[in-house]
Image 1 (tube, rainbow, N blue to C red):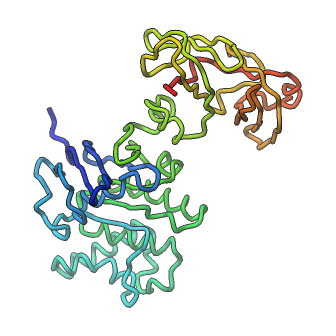
Image 2 (image 1 turned 45 degrees about the vertical axis):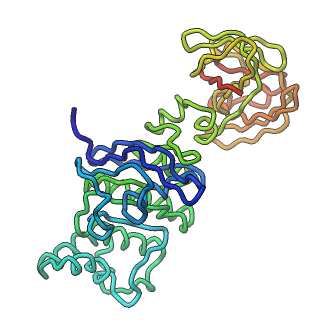
Image 3 (image 1 turned 90 degrees about the vertical axis):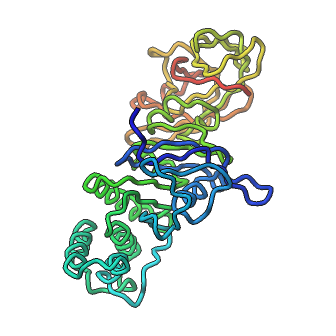
Length: 357
């Protein structure tokens, strides 16, 4: 069996009686872009700090190429780090900031000069070498911080909410830069964010944290199309949850009764639910249709509102139980308002998921 590049083994971190991280285990192959995603307080940054050496885990281990890093001080782990705050030295030029970690490591002047030039070229700031951070935009400062973190060729680059202080347009531009730099350098990146769109855009894989645990790990497609819990289904993307009663489950498929009494078969069920057990049916907004088509399940509704966004239509509908549904059909664009003259919406049961209530 191939030894993992980075291995997090049963890491637990407590602060008094508070358990911030509970039994986190994860293997990271060399060169992967892995994102720790989750709500505030879910343990993602605490896990990152345990890898960086800023916090010692209460128990567990962190291994790099099979060797424990816990006894190695943070400044000797040779790990690159980029924070939300740029932490640039305001009295130094851009080139001097990038050179700083190389100077600390007493690299030869010729190597420092070459490496600084390479890094500034990598982040496309060749013409800004002599400026000071105060003369740069927020996005440019973050790119300098990225260049400085990569200057000494760290085996791992840790990034903790690095773009959350930037506006949306600038954030998207820097995301594209980070993806390009990852492709060009092949550095292993562990990235922390609470922004699901950012995680989906950047990552090879996502580890979704919830209350100190990893709820699910996989590609963005895995988490979106194959959620293993209601939390994952609700956190990734937009979701509608409908109350239901399980009638039977077999081979990962369930037959259910919805609140309006309709029977739906062929729903995906990750867990074996007993007959009569209360459940929640998750249907993505884009899984609904305004006309039957190939969909084989229907739901009685009252249409409340509709808006047209060019590539999609957003419809708000209300069930007989008073629950509002977010519906974003990828078809039915033409004649959508005419389709809303009916009293039903439709969906494919195979595109829905069932979770215990």
